[in-house]
Image (cartoon, rainbow, N blue to C red):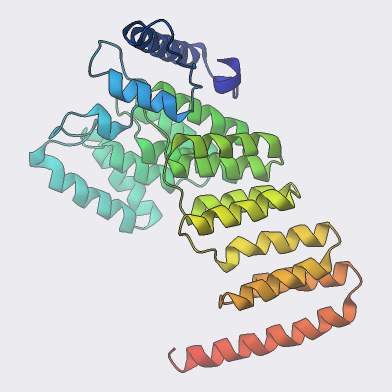
Length: 337
């Protein structure tokens, strides 16, 4: 448990809920062993492994074991409503109010939300909208505590938003504590959750932890998207793990997800740090060969790689190429496409 769940210094109640979840899972596995015979083997899943999700999801319907890590869609019986969702009579009003909150200026949004709170109509969607507009993680955490105090339970979007707020403030450990809390509260993380945690760890130069989280994400069986793969490529590049970065790009291509210019740009920065300007230029040519548009950020990354490694003449030549490309793009934009 200390390996799979010991990230951060979450409260005792959170850890105890996780302990109960693992104990419940052990009981399910024991039942399967008895039914399968003495020679069957069932390795204990880790807290984040896909086996944990699978065991809890499939066996909770057959036993009285509470499902700790099943997504909200599986926790609800068919035709029932999510937790904190308004009744059918108020559902349209809830949606209208959510749209209003998103479109209002900040000062009006706050006043309208306070009205919803006073009237008892503020639901998880309204709180999540307000949480996303918080200027820092401290405000977001305070709002999360307030919604829980009044009995409004956070959903996946709420938790993901709070994780991203902590990441932007450089608080990777607090983001991991939010991950622990959501799991303990029965909200299954999705690919956005894991990707955000990986990105936060990478920004804090915790490359080993980020790589472990990437492996755990792959083990969950969740469908990976372009955002997740780009996060992983950037993670490996920040750690100067060239082969892993290349392998990840190959994996995404095999999965039918086409790399973008943003996928390749971290490799250029990596080769600059590794004093391999020729490889940075090779990446630029690879991007061109794929027919991808090269933006200013990518050009600047290659120019820096050349200039920082003494390839001054080549850097100056590429500045001219970049300037010409920008002029062509601006001309095309002025002509409407």
